[in-house]
Length: 347
Image (cartoon, rainbow, N blue to C red; front, side, top):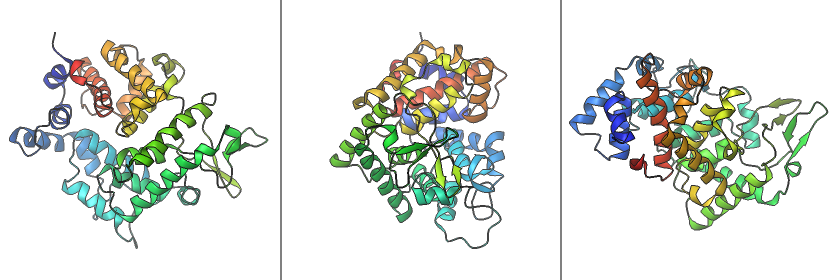
């Protein structure tokens, strides 16, 4: 029986072939084989549609945070997922325009609530920009380095809390929100650390590991998001899914987005490097391994969940063919496991 990687290489589209050969098989991107695949990727209708949204200065879309084609952050992630190189002219232009001092531009460099979240350190405009730069391998600048320090601070300070009530409150309407000056890590903090290298020394790694274990313990009975209070209104920050270790494929019956957000969290966190030492994370990735190995990650999805996957995570162009659906979903699982340190050649 052929391996899953072999199947994906034979039946997957150009993006799947390219990324497996470049990232897992370590074939040089300058080889004629991969350069040919890169040309095919650039001609994919979905990719061209996003690249057509480029502004004259290289910004993609009309705003900072939102959906692909409309906002910079998701557009960059989409292009990277499809195999566009970080050192391509498109991505170099993104780096330049994010770091450039802005005057008058025909798009929004912020998002609603972003300034308030910046003040609270909970994933505002600066954090989103830092995340984009980190995804593109650009962390040696003051913006990213400052947000890395904020992330480490939030993880370190979380160790002083014993319960969720130590850092958050609930108002009369039942809305839970962070206390003023509370430091409890969210998605932006963890994902930024996963995408960067400069912070990694023995002391910081140990702190991050202890904090994640501690936060899993504190949040084990709470599955909802926590709001951020800005003056008289609430802003929804980037909460991390501390219940990801409890995810079951059956959850999609209640929430068609459940699998997509679970996979995206696992993907963004896959490079943090301490997964095997944190039971909550290890359990989640082990479960993903089981889903991929058994192929339940495809067969046990319903139509609504598959539609969410197609709209948010898919790289294949033609989902009218069942093998394309299979390749798309399985490939995403394989790449998560690969970066989390699993031997995907055994699948």
